[in-house]
Image (cartoon, rainbow, N blue to C red; front, side):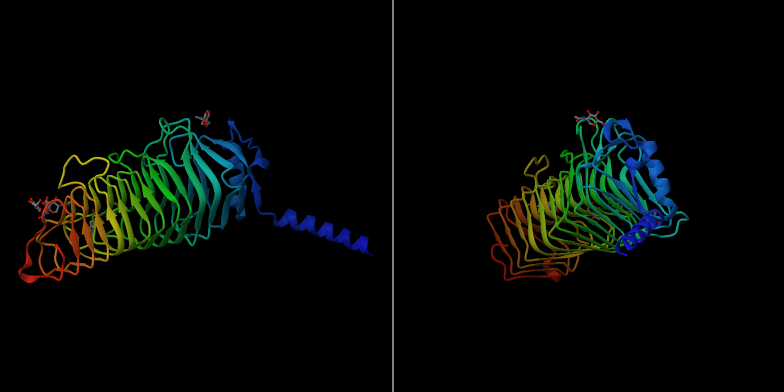
Length: 405
Ligand SMILES: *[C@@H]1O[C@H](CO)[C@@H](O)[C@H](O)[C@H]1NC(C)=O
Ligand SMILES: *[C@@H]1O[C@H](CO)[C@@H](O)[C@H](O)[C@H]1NC(C)=O
Ligand SMILES: *[C@@H]1O[C@H](CO)[C@@H](O)[C@H](O)[C@H]1NC(C)=O
Ligand SMILES: *[C@@H]1O[C@H](CO)[C@@H](O)[C@H](O)[C@H]1NC(C)=O
Ligand SMILES: *[C@@H]1O[C@H](CO)[C@@H](O)[C@H](O)[C@H]1NC(C)=O
């Protein structure tokens, strides 16, 4: 009786597996993973099977050479998963590596891309080529990926992850990118996009084309939490470069924006809210709002420091802490210190209704150099700045209860 039952169970399991098995191991389709054999065709075959009805494309431990784009085009849910950083795709051509699109241009829902490494090698890449390029991705996770290079001098990483089209409710979690020469993460037309943890590390030049996180227009609800953005020309950029309109709400908490040419740059009408800013060691400005915007910037807590610590070729127009050329802002409870240029620089009369409250502004080249109208500067402590402060436009403003400012 027992034996018969087990037999039936085995038969049932066998049938269950053959009908419902949804894992497509690229080795089963001929991928070798020895770091030398071209595994492109084998992986393409496994992907084709996976796209027929969804499932898991599994990248086991190994170094799999890829020499042309891997296209994922389906309306089914699928997962791309590896064993961790021992599962490596060697990116050996000059185009996007993983290209993920929906079948018919509608939304592509509920994907998980996780637990493997992408290593740029063998071929130099154009800056706009991404390791993971997606369009119309929604309700999806990209997590625990490392994107790096095995020859940083000759084959640095061009760009990391793109979410183009309409991107909605996606999370990029603990993704590490090393030696980015193009753009780390590019988001166009997104909403509820979370970038959590991880690091985006540039090539350390500070004056090339590189951008850590680029919101290219009409993004609302982008959250960046605890991510480290370091060693790029621009740490984080908000602009309307895609032409679909200004970004909307951007939230940054306890991220580190460090050692860039410029740290955070706003060139559109974004509302940017920062809690616990860490903006350090950038050369031109740590935080910069360009001309002709109606941007609203709110910074609460944290520190803006060491502007121009690597070099300061244009003292007092570079190496600044916070530079605002248009729009308005609130700076509340922030330490602005050790910037070689100006701690806070507001050179344009058109910046109005801003508030600098309860900040400690010390050991900068100049502490505060501001104009504008209808502003409030209250309850701050300014000390040990090299040049005296210049505050003009005070007719319509309140400057009160400050120590040394
Ligand atoms: C990088 O990987 C390629 C294979 O894509 C290999 O031929 C090369 O030797 C590796 N380079 C280094 C420095 O490990
Ligand atoms: C965004 O860019 C497009 C194309 O350049 C332009 O038509 C539009 O006015 C811009 N919108 C904003 C809000 O700047
Ligand atoms: C701001 O607008 C003025 C006048 O249209 C233009 O000359 C200038 O280039 C603009 N600045 C930026 C950064 O777009
Ligand atoms: C303050 O900034 C203005 C430009 O906005 C500049 O002309 C002036 O020299 C600065 N003041 C000092 C003391 O550096
Ligand atoms: C704002 O100030 C900067 C620095 O002095 C200057 O280059 C720019 O032309 C000014 N913009 C406007 C609109 O006045």
